[in-house]
Image (cartoon, rainbow, N blue to C red; front, side, top):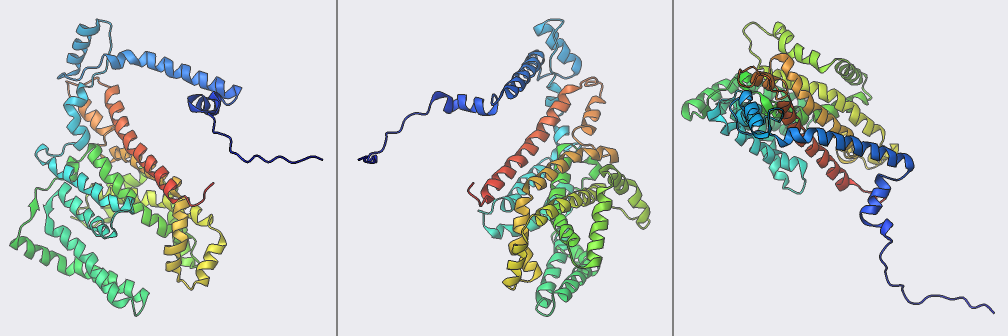
Length: 432
């Protein structure tokens, strides 16, 4: 008779084989998983080694303190020999302020610096939901505060602009119990009435009592990464809600709204961003009344927002299409209205699915801010570099400004990519 054997004690844990742990396991799985993978890895390592060998002397012979390019070359030749070549980072050391601030007045650098710090505080409650939701009120007020710090003028003008939104919100709150559509119309009329008839006299009266004013800085003094951050952040913040509305409009059952959304998205996506920037810079002035001034940076922000919003709409529409029909039916079964269903059930899932595409659009938008050079604004990559090289001291410097600008752009874009991965891991609900 055969008796079955069952083990009653646990085997002690043992260390995995050397090939199944540590660096050897990572190399085998990622770089040498097959013969072709190993060959490609070796070729890539050879190319990287060749590039490092070729570029190392140039970086090793770097000069950080010099007054001109000729001084850099003299220092390199005196230190490492007449045939040596090296990087002249002194151009960045001497002109760093132009790369960061453009031609913004030096005595007012504290204003964009303070605006940048306050911007980080305003973005924090939008990016991390662990923070108190009451901070969102500060995030809503920050655009006016940031504009006043960077451009200057009277602070009461920004307060008057915010007052229009407050008037619209109060009107909407009072009328929404009667009808949502009527509440929206009354809110728009209340805000427009405030801006057209009350904003100017209220601003003048407050300025006469307590003049809170900073020296005005025209937009043509802005440049460098200050300009890129302003255009990029504004485009990112405003294009997301615009994209959400356009994606919902394209899937709407109302023919007029759906047709307008489709027409808007396809027209904008079919036109290069440079064309829109030229339209904002040159053609828009022909349609404005004589004597009307419309800030160029504001026009660029509007066009960049519209352009990015059209692409964002298609990205979010893909997320909406990926949601099962049962989610819509569940919202109907709960008796939710259209906007309640979108806010509580549909849109959170669509945005979660669309995170990689949304962040990719944000990164592309931030890099596209360099295109403002075509409308005579000094971007950090081409505009400021040409301005620096236009001086006799730095005429001829080439690689260093582009490497420096590329490194700063990489830091911003890499940070957005890392945050995207953090957000995906945080919102991951499956356990596969």
